[in-house]
Amino acid sequence: MPPVLKAPLVVEFPFTRSLGPVQSAFLTGLRERVVLGVRTGDGRTLVPPVEYDPVTAAELRDLVEVAPTGTVTTWAWNHAPRRGQPLDTPFAWVLVRLDGADTALLHTLDAPGPDAVRTGMRVRVRWAAERHGAITDIACFEPYDGDPAEPAGHRGAFENPVTGIVAPARLDYTYSPGRAQSAYIDALSGRRTVGERCPSCRKVYVPPRGACPTCGVATSEQVEVGPRGTVTTFCIVNIKAKNLDIDVPYVYAHIALDGADLALHGRIAGIPYDQVRMGLRVEPVWTEGARYPDHYRPTGEPDADYDTYKELL
Image 1 (cartoon, rainbow, N blue to C red):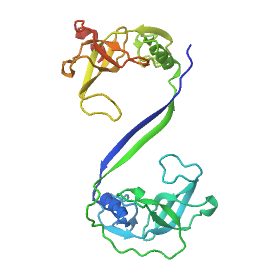
Image 2: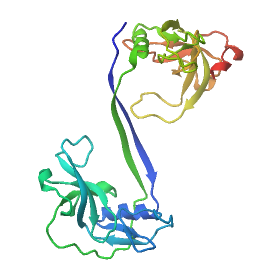
Image 3: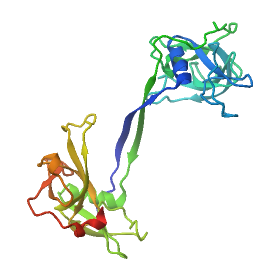
Image 4: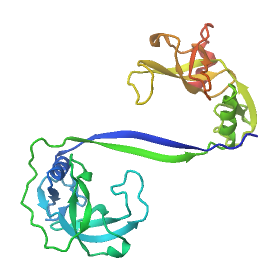
């Protein structure tokens, strides 16, 4: 049996969102070194501001400036900052109630060590040298022993307001495919495709999961399938993915390999994208040193009859 594999994987994408009038004013204010909250019907000032009262659900639009100084209400020390965090040296996560606000803002505190942090300590905003209209325009908080700052009374009207933001999302993790998929990946290195048959319903699953999703019983009998197969469904991709050197448009398809009872997906090439169709017979194309097929191409065989793959749609 081949060794169980492990590999570091990264899922990363930019998340783009538009801003309503309240969030737009808040982030634009940070760009201009102004901290805005929103006032509720009962007179509370919420920072960061929200568009609806969390108690009454009433829409909120009454923006009010608060001070860039405040008080730590609670904190936690971060001994080992991670990639992408606001500071690259140990720091404290803090909730800060800014002067004039009734709620606390989560951010970081630059302090020499945990002994220098306490609930009730006074802090102030340290602004980023370059500001673009994001929460990172507050570089961090820093200890402060002066008088509370006096807001200028800004009401949230700015030129060139920020109307949208792009927030990068990233997940780093270690993936272990387990026994069944390790055997599947090992077979691919020999340009073979191997699934596992359920001992109950006798269906062959590719890629194997180690258990039958229909019967819920363990699978262990290996079955080689393919290499040819049938296109069951497909989509035409018109948007070029970052770091993927494939010209658009191209086709990604579900392919039922001969002998398999579950379709896998792969790219279709060697045929104009607008000639790909359900029932098209295809075969894998490997590149030198690859551990999986680069794409699938037509075999030249007649199209498969719909009844032979309709259960795999």
